[in-house]
Length: 92
Image (cartoon, rainbow, N blue to C red):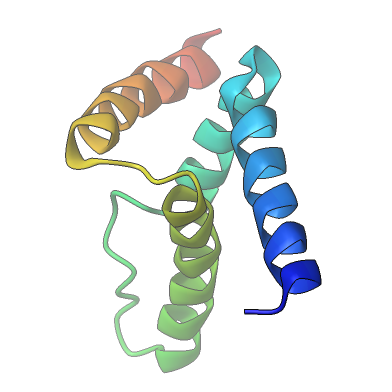
């Protein structure tokens, strides 16, 4: 990989990690996971366009999680945090 391209890729990766490790970044990440349906089915009965839309939303959230190098243990914690986030959103 060309040095300039490699440096840019590293800068982007560091920006993702710095952004989403902050308190506000965690709020945004939980919202993206919720809206993206990371832990929900994307199936919409008799609506292939609805499924495609849901999968696109999910793909963006999963892309960010992949950039962050999320482990299965991290994902489990995020799932639990997301449940708390959703309940606060519903009742807060």
